[in-house]
Image 1 (spheres, rainbow, N blue to C red):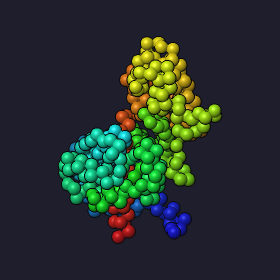
Image 2 (cartoon, one colour):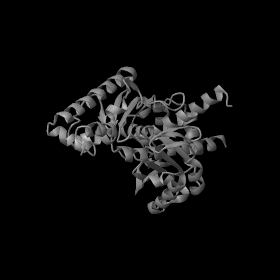
Image 3 (cartoon, helix red, strand yellow):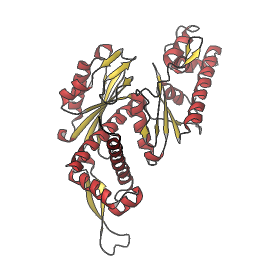
Image 4 (cartoon, rainbow, N blue to C red):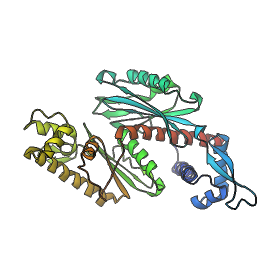
Length: 374
């Protein structure tokens, strides 16, 4: 087992790499001197990491002429977008989405396949991912370094095993092994809400390591929560931090029963059996039907309680609200702009991109640490 000192050194090394790369990406072209000044790292540390990135073909030197056009050209640094690619895959009950991310965190291609319950097994998922990868046509398969997968459920972080996924009916399922063997790539698996938060945080700025961010997901068949502190995902003792759906409200009531589309539709059908989805509830609410107004008042009341708890307990810089329900409410102008939260991008897209970003981080650390240690 690694010593505490070794773990601290490993974390510090990873933090320095992430911090410097974040500054490089946001400020490029930028000099080594400015990198050291902005990151508050020593010139020697900056030089070692830059040399490793350059050796790997991920960073290059560029000449930048001064504003006056006089004197020597400064030698600055910029990233090489084509230096490395990672894949992100998001799996839900309706579709499997794959995206290709370059080293500048830009999506190069996407593919989406409709799936059903019969597809929710490792062998079939592996086959679909292989088919999608062929359709994507990456610029260079040799530069695809890692695959990230996001899905609903509790994941064992070190191994990537899905310990429990209520949505898929999975318990202790290995998805890493089949995918890694079929694609000849390292594979990392992450909870979907945590993956979504990773992309939302990184794509919004300012520098993610100084912004504590919370993400509240309200979906069709589940709800969830994730947050970062100091740029790091909060995981908890068993990587279960944020599993709020089953919080008891007493009298056999759960929090998810007031904020999840499946539960809201079930409640609506007791009065209006023809209701099929959240859109029907919203339409009835617009018509002023009493049952729909009561249902939506109850939803917003519980949503407000959760938001206040997040704000009071965590006091994050920002709270992002996303998922099927916020998307439907936004389309119908029932979520007005407020200082209490920001509305997220499409959940499925952000999950796939977040999984690719997590894969990029994993691959980058492996490559750089191998180069530095070598």
